Amino acid sequence: MSVIAWTAVAVFTIAYVLIATEKINRVTVAVGGAAIMLALGATDAEHAFFSEEAGIDWNVIFLLLGMMLIVGVLKRTGLFEYVAIWSAKKARGRPFPIMVILVAVTGVVSAALDNVTTVLLIAPVTLLVCDRLGVPPVPFLIAEVFASNIGGTATLVGDPPNIIIAGRSGLSFNDFLSVLAPFVVVVLIVFVLLCRIMFRRAFRYDPERVARVMALKERDAIRDPRLVVMSLSVLGAVLIAFVLHTLLHLEPSVVALLGGLLLLVLSRLDPEEVAKDVEWPTLIFFAGLFVMVGGLVATGVIDEIAHAATGAVEGKLWPAAMLLLWASAGLSAIVDNIPYVATMSPIVSELVTASGGLDKAQVLWWALAIGADFGGNATAVGASANVVVLGIAGRAGHPITFWGFTRYGLIVTAITVALAVPYLYLRFVAL
Image 1 (cartoon, rainbow, N blue to C red):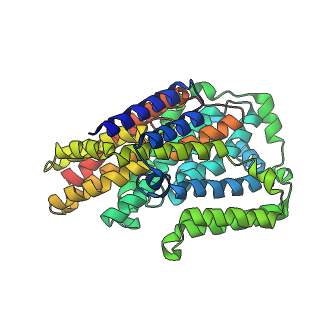
Image 2: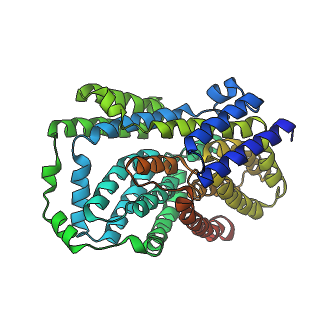
Image 3: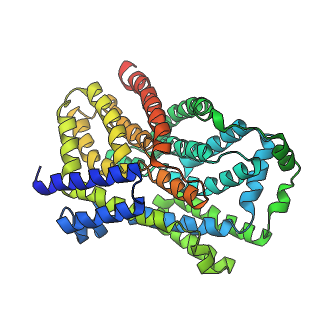
């Protein structure tokens, strides 16, 4: 690699250590790291702001912005309080059943929507439920992030890396559904059992608080019925457009932004007040992180790593699949899985072609998808949903530290990726 490439690795490593140790605000580190990458020439304005593979993913930024605007309006209707009270009463105030309900909803919804949209909708409900019952919200929020990344793996539209893989491999929506959805259901069940062990200290039961919650009438929480109907109508239209985006030829980011702006106009709320609920530091952090990772892509660092890994196992299908699975999980824990998958897809395509395009060779695509999607759970910056929830938690007065998240994420990633090994072997090698 060139001197600039090694410099880019050094800048990214230092920035990552600072984010992990939280010695400096993560937004400052991301923006500072991006600025250094630009100043050193590891990337340039054209790559940073306009490249799909090595720049800021504006689709992610504007998707987040649009959904944050919708959530900002919804918060003012009382709907989140309604759902919080309803779910708490259904679980009779018991914390673990509430976590099971929230995790199950998050996992299922993430398969239909992208996982970032899901956590944006579920996180406010979680904060309210935990506040009512007097239990710490951080374990619930972390569990939901894990569930969103696991659930999003099940379908083509559930996680952005899957969309990239589908475009390169020619795999259809039904292919993802038939191969990954059954496996994801099993993983979610195992994950729920894991939550019972990992977060057992969070399941405090306060009879007095529970009695007060059970006495509440959820309908009383709705402050503006007209705005509820309006908001749900716009949100429903946005979600339908997400599912039909290939037919409508509209990117999810455009749909979300149009929906957010439309709802803002129809609600007649003060735009400045709604804008206060937008996680601006999170959006800026994403932009900086994209530029830093783009520096690694533009200088060929990620490409070098990918070629070295795949070159070592070319012609050996099962070893190649296992290397892809675990390497994808490891690298997706460090860099965002979107640019990683964008870089690896052409290489995997070559390996599949070199294997004669056999059905069994498709295991390489599934190993890449599972590794990249599940690997996003390993660290606080491994997936977009992780960063969003950390931002929401911080604004709500319940900060989640890098290691507070990662110590659970490493366990979840190791177990879920390990579950993929026998599944892929039985599905594509043994049978």
